[in-house]
Amino acid sequence: MTPVDPDSFEDPSLKQLCCNAWRKDCAPKALCERLAKLASDTNLQSIRPPAAFWRQPWVGVAAAAVVLLVSGVAIYFHEPAGEYATINSQLASDMVARHDLCCANHKQHQLAGIPVNDIPLLGKTLSNKLQQPVMVAALPEMGWTLRGGAVCPVGKTPAAHLIFDRIDTAQVSVFSLPHANNMHNGRYEGVVDNHPMAGFVDSRGAFCLVGSVNGSLTPAHLAALRDQMQSAVVMNTPVTQRETVAELLH
Amino acid sequence: MSLDAKQFEQMALEQTDLLYRLARRLTHDASRAEDLVQETFLRAFKARNTFRLEQYGIKPWLVRIMHNLHFSRSDREKRQPKAWEDAALDAASAPSEPSPFDLSKFDAMDERLVHALEDLPEEYKTVLLLWAVEEFSYKEIAHAVDVPIGTVMSRLHRARQRLSEQLKDFAKEERLIRE
Image 1 (cartoon, helix red, strand yellow):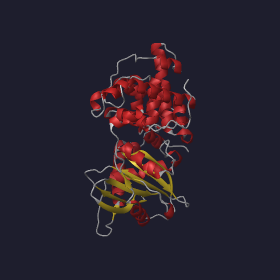
Image 2 (spheres, chains in turn green, orange; image 1 turned 90 degrees about the vertical axis):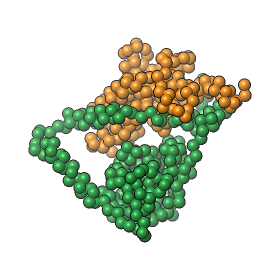
Image 3 (cartoon, chains in turn red, purple; image 1 turned 30 degrees about the vertical axis):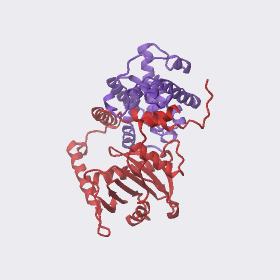
Image 4 (spheres, chains in turn brown, green; image 1 turned 180 degrees about the horizontal axis):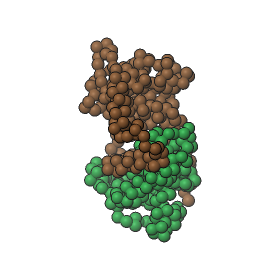
């Protein structure tokens, strides 16, 4: 049996080869729809209460409409220094939901094999995985500690997601997403679903900071962090198939 | 930490692509892969009360369900051992089924590379996929496929060796190595 050094198996070329071959394999839409239905059916079977008027389908639709209306009203963006940018309100809500979910379990929020204090490697790896620019920086001078970075879905879109925290337990997520047609370049700040938010959009993509619901965090704080991080957008140059195989056989 | 049904459902459904990719590697067939993914989720949803987030997270837990389900099915269908030993994996010099991989999706990639990966034994492909594409740690892979960590690492090494051997012709043609 070949002897194995437990610390030696880090092979970027093999990873690259597997990613090129397999990462594009995604579940068909029909399967996703069936699974979503399966989930709701299973939930209904296990927790179905007695029928009541508030369980009627039309009540659910009306409640959803009210929630959407309230969410829409809650989203406001103001215009800093003559610049104005917008992002889709659904995207903003998706980022908030992702922030809440990942921050609840940030101990598992780090790419395997990447030390959390190796910021350049983290940025390079995230950019390489997503094939898009990502915003990665350390912010110790502003009192924030990086707890981890990973690729997470925001709605249906894969995004680079960093989590920072502070001594007072406040948490900030930093998202990097690909540019989309419904985004307008510029900077933005605001509050979404009670979470402070600040970010910017440019030709490289959308970059957004979302703060936890904490009395000490405001959109202005996040805007300061955004301004600090804005120069830290990195794009890793993808290696070619030929280079990958050459490295693998080396 | 305990999750409510909605959070559990969201976290689980986010892993659909991961499970589908794994199912494709295990079953070699798109429709069987979909069946396997669906059955895995059905079991996961029914067993959600047994899931504890702190241990390894939801990904290894779901992979473990799929892995067990696939091999218990294979056991029934083919009357084969539940899991192959490494010696048997090494002895398997050729794939038992032709690879049904859709090469048209990989325009930028030489089909020989794709076939070389697809021709690896299932257990090698599983650990390669989880390690390379899904960024699992060795510990998570070991938990997910229920083998010791040393076995995970030796499978990665052996998979790499076999790929290198299979890609020698490609490398010669591309003049990456001397003949």
